[in-house]
Image (cartoon, rainbow, N blue to C red):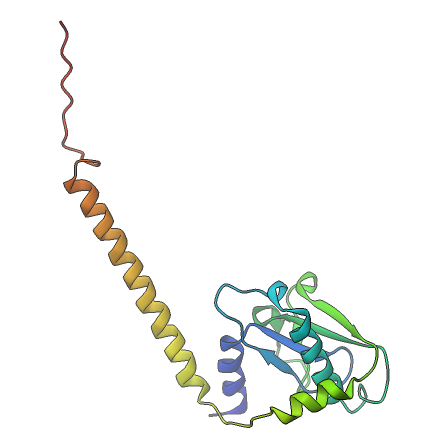
Length: 168
């Protein structure tokens, strides 16, 4: 699988991307639970991600007061005319910024101790997510059909019902 294809699967699996603004740096991708947004990211996780991208930026690691930008994956924009590693945004209002005043070695060291390197099968993970979403939609549709047929049998819904009014 090509690097571009891997990134495509990765982006579809994640919710948000962190990067040191206007500097070359590593990217941190945060997978969120379904239904969560970047506004749901805790302050602790936000600080950890910001410290990690700052520490992994050659320029950003040497200077203080760097901005780290983060945005939902669907706001990332890549065109053919952009350089390798360059990315834009569809909507700049969706981009959030957090200022990192200085590197906090305790945070970076704690994160590096828990670092695990793996090579995930991103395509298989994406297909598993898609299959789970299809199964959930199918179950919801089946539940709705069952509910509708129950209402019809109990007389709550019926297009063939006739009302009789006694006039005495």
